[in-house]
Picture 1 (cartoon, rainbow, N blue to C red):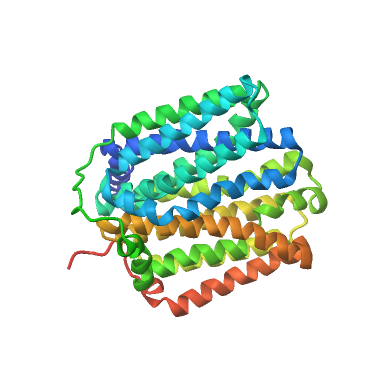
Picture 2: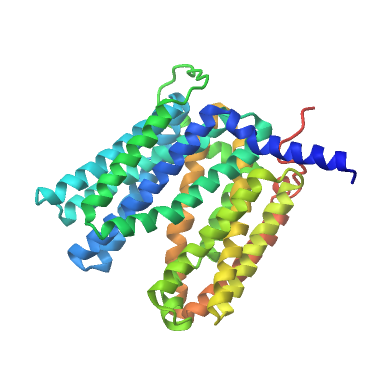
Length: 419
């Protein structure tokens, strides 16, 4: 390559890296997601710790998660309809404002002597209901803020913010909790307020749809669209089954204590490893987005996720286990970015809220049911057997989806060129 060609390529790389920053509305959403997710992670650390400190019951600790998932499932159809009818940035701002109110309530609760089990469970219900609207609004908003050609890079860059918040939020929450739960809740309220302020500054052309009442057809339109569009169905169902079978997060305490024998500090590193791998990969994809043969790359990434799960399950080395989890996190990030980009590109804007709501239920179900599946199979086969079975199942899913969803596996371009 000539020196001139190298200079042109370098300038082109810099231009691609800075292109997202020129879209101010998108960057406001990115900052809102960073601060909002960090606050949500901190809030969950404090809420869970306070519940266990208050009751000493693993059952009550599990109820915190269940009380958040149940309203999200119950409200999915309504949330999708609302996101498609109203200004998505304002919906997101309202969700962040409610979460700031939850943090403020929990801050005042213990001071008023009301920080009891019922308060924590009640606030968990509110958080679950809010996130039923937040996730689809957030997903459906991105395509309105950047051109279609930039959407793969925008999705990857948004995922980088998410992973950074997932890594840093719990660590900061745990650090602040040493000063008391009030320190965490106060910081969360401030961060939620900051995130909501960024959302209020987002401007885009919102065309209100024709006035139609909320009826059975409008509520189920997203479900019907996903079922009829084989590419979208393949993309959203792939996450459900791959994570359902391949996830090992619920068993990490067993591996840390009984198999790798590394104790609590090692458990913290094991939990951080997938997010660290995902963060590195999302940063890479922000600069080098996947544009060709996304279907094959997607299914290949799922297969790598399955192989990394097998490596983790068979490992007795702490270093190898960390590496396997990091590789799995990186492969999962490739899958996430491609799937979310395809779903948004293949869905008309008038349907994005309802389709994103359906997608969010698939994601939530894969995480919740995946933990249950891991625990159930571990009770029968032991933790190693459970993880190995999950890795084999993930490889099988990748092979089956290649066969049964040709619209997905044979996709040649992530962003289809104009005819």
